[in-house]
Image (tube, rainbow, N blue to C red; front, side):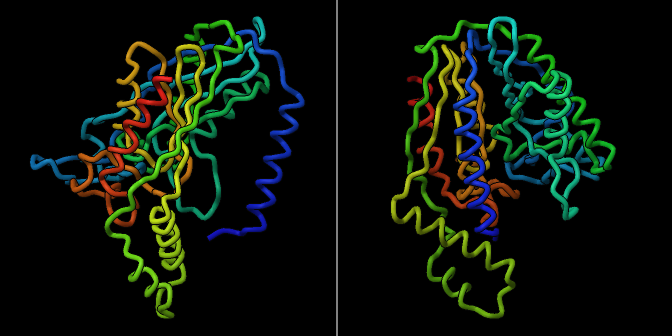
Length: 322
């Protein structure tokens, strides 16, 4: 599935960089909060029919003009921006936006795609000031309404996202930084495994020499996740407090209802979300989405039961209230 030696080297390098960053820490006098509406990027992938079931999936690159003509559907149209300042000097920028970060793909080459290009453009525009971008709860969100997969669309989407990043920074309201303005809370939760994960069947497949080796990597991951759930192993949820603002750091490929629910829990304050932390659960849908069909709640994609919502929403509410 991956090269363990490379993974260990990468972890070591990140650890060393974090230690060096701590030694090079800079004074922060203010933190800034801003947001901007993003123009023509996000659209919901799950298009429902009259019966409430998914009748079509509008993937991030969508060549079907009829599906591209469908409404955007449920999205979070806003990009959130957090910035750190020393007086009038900007030190760093963090941004948060929910969508699949893809324009065209399956090329066999790694590429940061349009969010990475937008981040790089903003960092260059700010003369090298660090800009870090986080994907929100974009499991059921993509650029499919505005992207037919043509390679030139990558730059178009990057430009639109960079413009929203710039607008959010321009709209920033600065707040004094103090020790009591900042906080970090962690809450461990145990997620329920999907009912389709069966240890006996998974072990049988692992022992079948006729199985495709690539398929077996998914079987091994499923078995590992199932055993983690059976052993009661927790996944940590995190919340960063910046004054009245909150930023949730969540596991898996969450769908957009979780991000919107988090905002509704503190409707008068700034709430951002970064998902895609511990990816073992795969897609994490809202309870209402399980059973609707489509890709996101399929056995291939989601490794948790519909009751996962009953675990995550109370945990989010507890973290946001602290």
